[in-house]
Length: 435
Image (tube, rainbow, N blue to C red; front, side, top):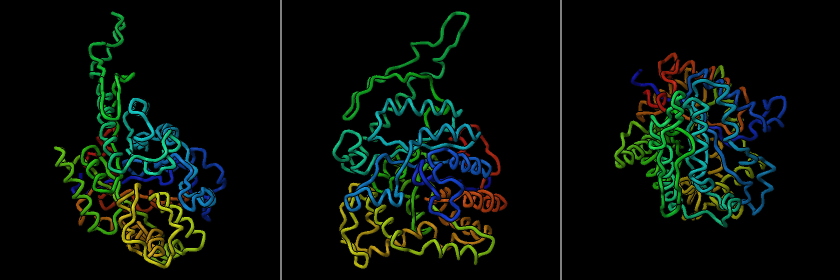
């Protein structure tokens, strides 16, 4: 493996839901967003390009934070509707052979045994290609669909998630490797002495075990995590094998990566066992001029886009941004029980500037141009940051965008020896840790 190689993945933003419905390249039937077609098309292109994983984002409520109503969210399809990602996953598994499939599930919505059983099953049917994006739930609307009035406090959610992970790890390791005997001659299916209850009684969970299925091919799913707060980074250092993060520039990327790696070292882990991937939204075209024209068109903000962005910011933070003027600075202190690292970056800034930056980010003009230009810049960024790769994100992409990335940009990365041309291993984790 080349010393400068890095990993690629795709963040399926807005989850199993509509993508390019308002785009001029929206496709022939926007009503088919409830079918697996778009996901399967993307997954097959990603595997052709040697990506590590396809991560399906999720949240499980129709938001209503903005203006105290769900109307703006439904009018503009802001983070809704979303179908269950665990149902999309088997279609992606069936359509691919090597690609890792990462499913988002919340520790505040699942019970540990239910989740451990689900991922054990998915890893079996995928022959060892499943991952779990661990989220803790941040929106009170989600809590209200699961028998609560509001979410637990931010840091306590991570305390709960730590215990949740301990329970799942215990369940996934509850069967010894040789517990499954399958001895037809003596009539022994499994050795009960090698299958162990965990008898967990903690602060938040009580689970007897054992899991009702033999060990999965990977023994546990690949753990993915996206929390950007200090507490989120500490959780990542303890548990995550790949971390999704947004950064403003290469210096910020390097700072965040080093912080996460330090948390891993503090937890007694090898920092190289945590692959930190940075969100990017390149715009690729045959000439720089064409790519820049598309970039400039994409950041034109009309009233619909303003309402979309305000509704989105409100959902992520739990703060109703309709109460603030667009042309005035926000308060120096914003109190959020949601995505705290994100909210901290907005404090004291003019709301209109945040919206314009949100439309631009994470596709700065350095990631706009020909495949040769963008591949060269990605190489420069990784050399400065030290690793570990990029996670493509485009909330409402058309299929044209998939082809431009997977069949336009990635071949140039491969030509430069920066990304894989073939999968080295059968299992997701082994490919992720191959370099």
